[in-house]
Image (cartoon, rainbow, N blue to C red; front, side, top):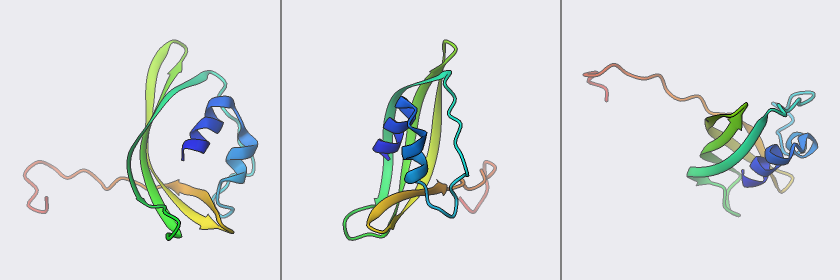
Length: 104
């Protein structure tokens, strides 16, 4: 995850495509040069050790675009392919439940 953030920071689309699972990888990647990535917080991880074949990372990436600060929050899924970790995609957040919902 950290290496992919670094690749976004320096505009290395080739690395991002190489570390993207072939099933979900786009044919090309056009990075937004107006974004300046300013920080990464890894909030939670599951799996991902030498003994696992899949894992998840919940992160928050901070950026500045045209002078305005912003952030990207994502829960990502990774799998090990040929010994290397590759990004599969974002895991959708479950829908919010209304206050007072007994299933909480």
